[in-house]
Image 1: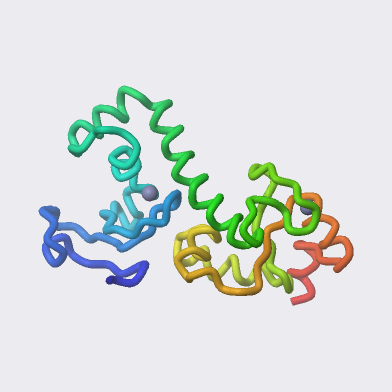
Image 2: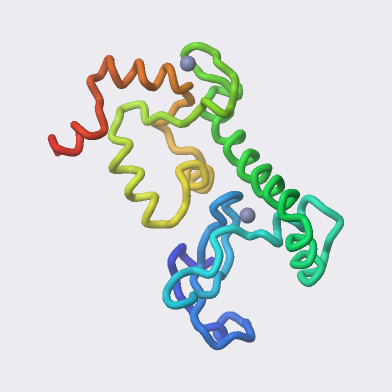
Length: 174
Ligand SMILES: [Zn+2]
Ligand SMILES: [Zn+2]
């Protein structure tokens, strides 16, 4: 498998286009695939078609394109669902098998996120950003490394206050 960020000519990878393609992960579901580069920028960030194929009876690219033009709202919903699946999986893993905060048990996924147990989130996040993937996708792809936990927003803010962690302040000190 190519590495994230690898660039190849269309012909080298069996594509009809002559331009360059970059190997990237879908920002919503993490699926890795070749994406054409347009003026040095990946043409799309998410694998729209895959999401349609997985969730509808549509099986052809042409139909998929037409469907997404005609159903912008359904498409948005689908993409959101794909993203939620990934988030839920990661949150549940780091919630010790529950889709809930490990400190207080709060279970609304909208207010749950992944916390770096020993802080230092900003450095790590920077590393991840370079690969063009979100923390959730990165964690799943890297087989759930240790050092993370699921916390709700409240518990994260409390933890930060207790550790005197402050994003702005941290930056200056380093
Ligand atoms: Zn995707
Ligand atoms: Zn909590």
